Length: 241
Image (tube, rainbow, N blue to C red; front, side, top):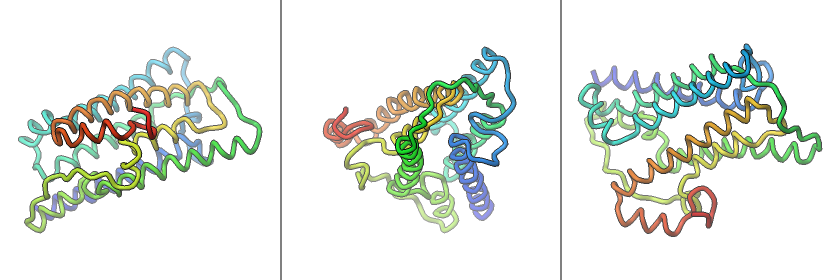
């Protein structure tokens, strides 16, 4: 059974990684991609807005509820504890895949940057954002964040050590570099359509809500240690609390 759990965790990780790569192409409107934030089947404006908001809300609710300690305590009565994170990652990936498939573009242009130096700068910030996201996951243990470490430890008969409070690299300057990277990636574009704006704004609202919930959990977990860190380090930007 441990080997099956390890196989499940590995398959889920591959699904996540493919979904993550597609998210980059989706937001960046990469050529040759059939469905992106600006390319795909269209619908009347009100239907498209309502449907797109519903898809983002579904992702946000899944992402937030399943990450809460109370849900985890109940959920691990149903699924093995060492696979809880893998199920979370799978659910998040499926919610994003559904968003990709059902998203309806809104092509009205909100801004268009034609001056090449600024357009290139915005494109560079887009890729920088994704790099910050990926690097930050490795700084806090990429394999554990996506469920592989837990499954591998169970396969070997080991326990995962209790979480340690650490602030490596980016985390010495901002408390939530992963979210900062997403914000850079979502908003940095020389061509901002109404659909892209809706996506960026909706995900930004989710990020702000998610930070509040996550920090509440971190205070419960690490107590005064995290409170002192929060007083010293900015939330998303250095010096901005």
